[in-house]
Image (cartoon, rainbow, N blue to C red; front, side, top):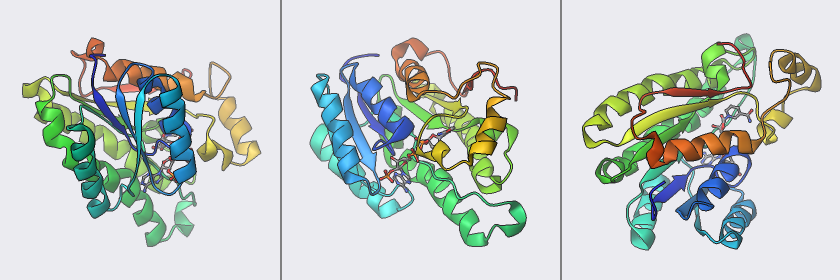
Length: 246
Ligand code: NAP
């Protein structure tokens, strides 16, 4: 990774986002730790990065709210200048079998998981286009590749990121900036905690590596995608799922 990059990781207060923020922070970047409501956890993430010698700034914004994202963008520009690496990580689930899913449950997941990606990519698009090593990294899911029982809304958003990423990759290509997707399998975070134990056991049986991912398994791949070593890779989906078929 080239030095002095500024990286924004959305949803970095907990889980995969926190792991990514800490990993990028270990590589001398300035990390913006975005969060929606977990202020204490976001400050804790920032403190962990600073304790490791990095620079970190926690900033609140609900990614589904365009005004809040634009205010965050202005604040980042005031504090540290343009963003080089945008990691669109913030995401939510509201699981229901399709026959019981309400329009509101559908829209909420779309608003955060796709609307949030639109808002953030739009706000920082010029920064990334003009950066020497601009990166858009979208955190999708194996569920976007395979579908998953009870997750029609979530799967739609995570598949949607594939088409979005490939298109943004084409539109950035002339500038040498890149856009890629990282599609994790099932990762040990609060999101997985919500899954019933018997469902987790069934999922485990489908993972050739016979374990759920640690946050670090995903963060290391994102660090590579964020680095200048990945400069000739764009529009790709990196499946990090313990060998699950898709
Ligand atoms: P998590 O533990 O539930 O953490 C979610 C993070 O997103 C939190 O930091 C949360 O902030 C933030 N967030 C949620 N809604 C937001 C909003 N509207 N605006 C800003 N931030 C928001 O989730 P995770 O498991 O780490 O998942 C992170 C990403 O990886 C998601 O996109 C998810 O779809 C994807 N993923 C997860 C798995 C898995 O098995 N865990 C697998 C594949 C892909 P607050 O703390 O402030 O609420």
